[in-house]
Image (cartoon, rainbow, N blue to C red; front, top):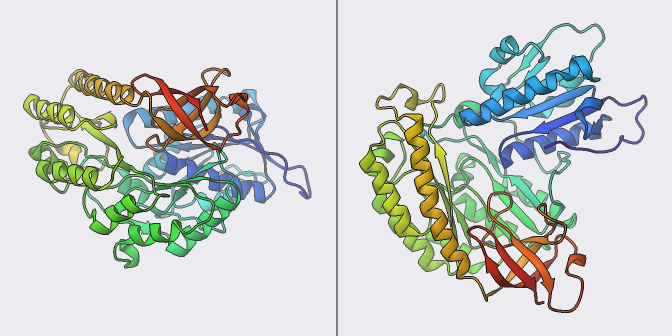
Length: 466
């Protein structure tokens, strides 16, 4: 994702142009938005074309092997602009930079600077240092993570104007055997409730209707601040913000789900009836090897409890296949459980060795080909479930949030219902307006009623009825 903006008024000299490439998850996106905001505030000119930029910043991802390779490829690709473009300075920021630091400078000579997750707030100072007259030294900035922005930090938001991500905490205190996030992002550090609520009010005043709450471990929000039941405390403040229609927390760990939290989901109209809770596996031996809390019985009971007490709940989860020691029997157990539980959305990831994590040293590694076969099997099971659920919605009337003209064709509008999170779930394609008006004239950010007329596994088709 590449951001664009205009020259900041009042700059004393011709501003330095910056091209920005954002990779990775929504948490990375917020980091990118913060860096873009402070760069624009301090007189840099942002361009959508990196070939026209004097400074090119790649905000990298280092979560899994595919993401790391994508980040490295982006650095190499944009490094060529130092020869055939205007680029004077190439910077790698983000998780990959925090994790590999000096190794990146050594292996990628096109890089001038490496900026870890603890120094994204210093991006203006870093750019000016690297642009300094006579500068020859390549440098690493890698303070201990994490850096946390607040409501006063400038942000130049990417994506839809009516939907925003808000990072409520950084880092993670868990010790999952496969995960390098604590290495890259540090221990958990939560923002104060007052800061998040203030940012929510600012965003709502700017026209944001959907607030997406993100962190590495959202259910654990506030534990480092000594706030008991912190997520409940935060949500009770956010539902008071005028203008917000959907508040959507992401990444709930399947522990510490209290009755107060469930009651809040069930009783507050503004909180989406949508749970995003990665389970990673359900075989008890695998969960233990993964260093995950709980077992299959706990997870199954929790899902039933949430569905019973939150009517209309949409449930998204995720699994890892091929973790060391995953036998055919363990995988078969997961596959059968997935078929029985009938989740609305499921992500399936291949295990990869991540340096510094406990799983690297584990025996009984699974071949890549076997992992891919298992992922395909799980996704096939889920596709059939999703298709059945989607077809069951034909004839229903849903409230949907209009996103704008579809990226697939300008003949359709794209929208989402409450059970569809931005970017990771499907959409509702709108192709008609029963009211006799041009359906394509409905502005993005508008909530309308849509009658569902057709369905695929992950997307729906509908017409506006009110």
